[in-house]
Length: 258
Length: 222
Image (cartoon, chains in turn red, green):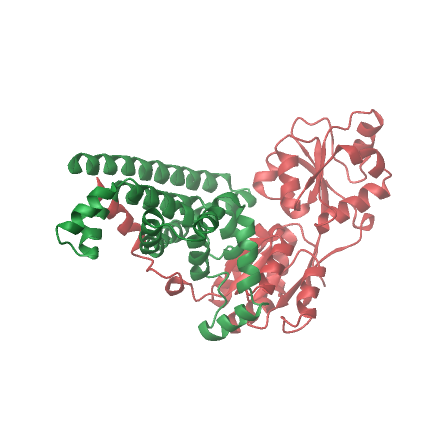
C-alpha cells in the first residue's frame, strides 16, 4: 500500500521539480481585474496567435492585486477595473508611466429566470416592485470597495430608488460576487457588469438590459506597465490598445477609447 | 483539471514535511523529556498557529518580508526576488502554520515511552544516538507517521495563508485549493467541481493510508 502511494506521488511530482522556481513559465505574468476574465483570455489567445508570445493571466480584485504589487508580486502589466488603483501604483513610483485607459465598463440590470423583475434600462420594472412594497433582495457590488458598486449606487440614486431599496440590497465584495448573488436566484436581480452578463454561464440563467451610459459616471479602466516589465509584457501592453484587442473587448461588453 | 496546481499542492505538502520533520523530532523529544524554564511559554507559542486565523500569519509574513519592509528589500537584493509570491515564501508560511501539527503528536509519542526503557537502553551501553534511532524512534513511530500525514493533509487544505502570501501565480503559488476558488470566481463550476473531487479523493486516500500503515507498524512492533 505504501509503495503504491509513493509511486503515485512520484508520477505526479516528478515532472515539476522540487522548487517552483524551475518550473516558472518564461511567459510574463499579467494581473487583471476579475471582470476581464473572459475578454482578456481571448485577447491573450489573439496575442499568442498574432505575435507568437505567451502571457500568463492572473485575475483578482483590483484592490487585492494592487496590494500584492506593492508587496512585491512579480506582475509585469496590471489591468485594473478603475483608475484609482493604478494611479496609486504610479504615484508610488512602481510603474513606467501613468498608463492608459484601455476600456470603459458598462452596467446592466440582470434578472434571473423566474424572477418577478423584468429588466429594463430605465429601471421602471424595479420601481414598480419597490412601489408595490415587495422588492425582494437586490444585488449590487459594495459601493465602498467596488467601482461597479459606486456606479450602481449612482444609477439607483438617479432613479430615486436608493433610499427605498437600501434595506433590501445585498452587497457583493466584487461585481463578480454580486453577479453570483443575482444569478443563483437568491435575489430578484442586480446591477452587474455587462461583461459578466454576456458570459455563457450568466446569460443562460436570466435576462439583462443595458443601463444608459449617461446614468452613472464612466467606469474608466486603466492599465499600467510596471517597472519590472520585460519586452513581451510591453508588447502585450501595446496589443491591448490595438484594433484587434478593442474588437474583442467590445464583443465582451466594454466600450473602448477611440 | 489544473495539473500544475495539483503538483504545487503536493510539492508544498512534501516540502513542508521535509523541513519540519527533523525540527519536530528534535523539539518534540526535547519537550517530552526535559523540564526547563519557559517551557510553558514555548509550548503556547508552538501551538498558537492552531488557534490564530491564517490571516494573522499572512499579515505578519507580508509586513516582515514584503517589498516595502527593510528585511524584505534585503532578501530581494540577495535572492533576486521577493519572498512573498514565490514557492519558497509559501513553503516558509506553510512550515510555520504546521508547527503544531508536527510537534504535538511527536511529543506525545516520546512521552509515552517509559523512562525505564530509556534507562535500560543506556545501561546496555547504547550511545544517545543509538538509543534515539534504535529504541525511541521505532517506539514513537506511529506518532511520527501521524504527525507527518497530518502536516501533509493540512498543507493540501491550506487556503488563507496561501491566498495572502502566495497570490495566485500559476505553476508557482497556485495550489489546488486556490485554483478551485479561482475557477469559481470565473463561473467555471465544472473545473472547480473536478478539482474539488480530486482533493477529496487525495485527502481520503491519505487518511486511509495513515490508518493502514500505523496498524501494520503497530502489529509488527508488538
